[in-house]
Amino acid sequence: MYIVVIFTMRVMGKKNLGEFQPSDLVSTILISNLTSIVIEEPHLPIAYSISSILIIMSLEVIISVWVKKSDRFAHISQGKSVILIRDGIINQKAMKELRFSVDDILEALRSKDIFYIEEACLAVVETNGTVNVYKDPNANTNIQKAKIPAMPVISDCKIIQKNLDIVECSIDKLESILKKRDLTADRILLMTLDINGNYTITVKEDI
Image 1 (cartoon, rainbow, N blue to C red):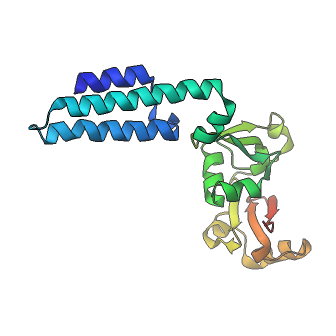
Image 2: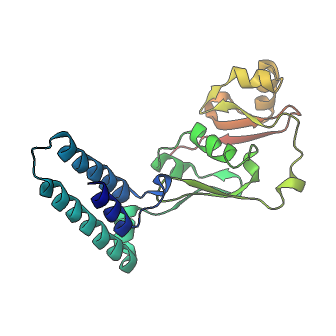
Image 3: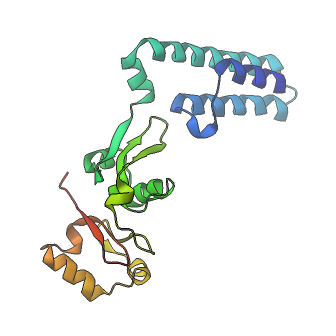
């Protein structure tokens, strides 16, 4: 069974697990389950599992050929990449469609060493779910960074007290900033603030 699975994966040309498309992942899970059946139940003919694995392999190869030949089929079977951030502005419609939370976005940016959202010139969610970010080439000169970087102090209309403490900002100071912008916390999708008082605000859209 080990030899059969190695042969199958070689023919299917699988990538790293983090790069799997939905069909790739489903095929891999099914193959692992089919392999375990004959190992756990040695009285069953091994041909049952081998034939099923080869059928899955054949289907996966056929799908990969169709994907290359038809863009429409590729979009149906694998989806398409979506722009999540452009020029530091979150695409809230795309965010809702992808069921991304504010924390998901910030985590993706931090994984690319980006703590100031305006540094993100372009963020794209790929068909395999990974987020690729193109950093603004002028960000280093355009943004006056603080010793403690920008932290989310309001996320999805909720004030995050622990982050306010980190950037040494009181509730009164936060409310003063919002008052100048004629805003309240319940209207804000995301507000980031650094220890120098630099902030960005993304107002929540009605979608």
